Amino acid sequence: MQAGLRPSANRLVSSADHLASTAGHPTSVDRLLGSVLSRALGAAPVRLFLWDGSEIASDAAGERFQLRLHSRRALLGLLIHPQLYFGECYADGSLDVEGDLPEALTALYEATPKPHGVHVAIDRVCAHLRRISPSRSRWNVHHHYDLGNDFYRLWLDERMVYTCAYFPTPDATLEEAQLAKLDLVCRKLRLRPQERVIEAGCGWGALALHMAGRYGARVRAFNLSGEQVAYARECAARAGLANRVEFVEDDYRAATGRCDAFVSVGMLEHVGLRSYRELGRVIRRVLKNDGRGLLHSIGRPSPAPTNAWIVRRIFPDGYTPSLAEMMEVFEPNGFAVLDVENLRTHYARTLEHWLERYERAVPQVRAMFDESFVRTWRLYLAGSIAGFRFGSMQLFQVLFAGPASGAVAATRADIYRQE
Image (cartoon, rainbow, N blue to C red; front, side, top):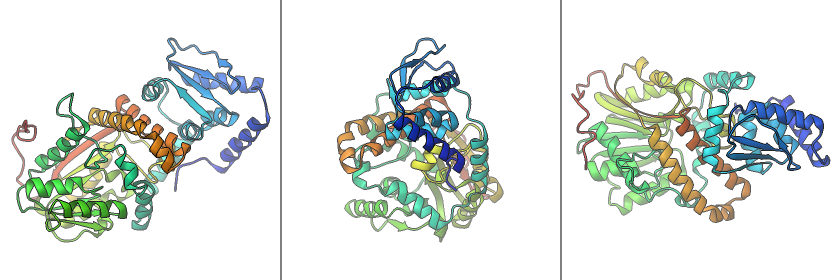
């Protein structure tokens, strides 16, 4: 079930949109509702303007940003379901933010209360009940990752890594930071030549190729995106690694055989909360008793549903777990958690690099898609920066081992050695 408004709420906002298209200046009711919205923004340094250019008085001090509503639909939408309609109205142009967008969104996060109410309650129940089948997973992956390699090539690094980078120094480039992340994952797994690795959700293949080319591992990598798998196979052939890396276009649940290490970077967000134990059983089936593994996932400081607009427009069925929820993968299946690291600040910096490159590529993106797509992805990247800066979003790397593993290192010194 995708997040959204109840039919009655949808009708209300649609009716308001019709009124906005036929009415001229805001009415006294509009101004009253604008005052309600202004108070809901709390101490956020934001000036609120209605569609005739009039300003709604605010008690906030030091306003640094302007929020301009261009329709009654935008006003009512932000009052009825702000998590959903902020994104919808920004994307269709009925809402504009003047000022640095990531900074404005961070300020809104800091000033407004944690989302609550009936929509949040419904979304939480749905997250616990939703089971994501292999066919549903394939559709979800196609919706996001098969937008075209040419699109992602515009703003990702040269290896096409679409997950959190690791910045070993403040001045590291995005390319350097993504390579450092790939190597950090391998060092945490303490990979050795000829070891067999199963990777679930391999993206465009950068990690699998790094494990094979740099560490001499033999990798079987699973992915449901046809475009990504085709690209990864071409990269393996060019690098002379096709005999060491097999890219499989299939669901992670189809994994067979036995491996020394299991790794998944950026896939858990698509698995679905109800399927965590199933993922754990898959890992238990393929990982040797003395093997080890690593899960890398966006997370939350405490359980909460994913933003409704993100679920509707960006990641269908997406769910970002708390650390306690992630334990459902490990504890019921007898895995020992060896190490947990939070790379939240690194993801904020990664997204800053992505947004900067994306903005430079906007003319090409607009030519590929349309203005609504341009605004949708700008808001997605900027909102993600704000979430990681504010702390509502986390990035967990969890290192774990099978029940017979003795691979518990005394220190982390070898992981963080300088190359």
